[in-house]
Length: 103
Image (cartoon, rainbow, N blue to C red; front, side, top):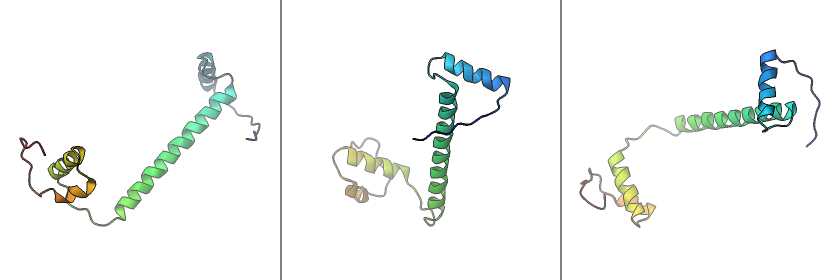
């Protein structure tokens, strides 16, 4: 990848922080520290954009439906015990008996 030479101005505190990062041995020079900070910020923005898009997708997916956690848990156990995801619809819509090994 091509590189571009930049000149930046830092406060004494920022310069000391960069020097401390180099002293840890994780970086060999100022450019590596700054490059790592930029890479992390790019990753953070990418994650934020993904979360924003997921929220938009959720808002546009329609009206919310009632969620029955007990039914979900029973279906998950059914799948875990050897059923398939298609069996989830076969789970009765009732509160499971906590003593029932299938739920």
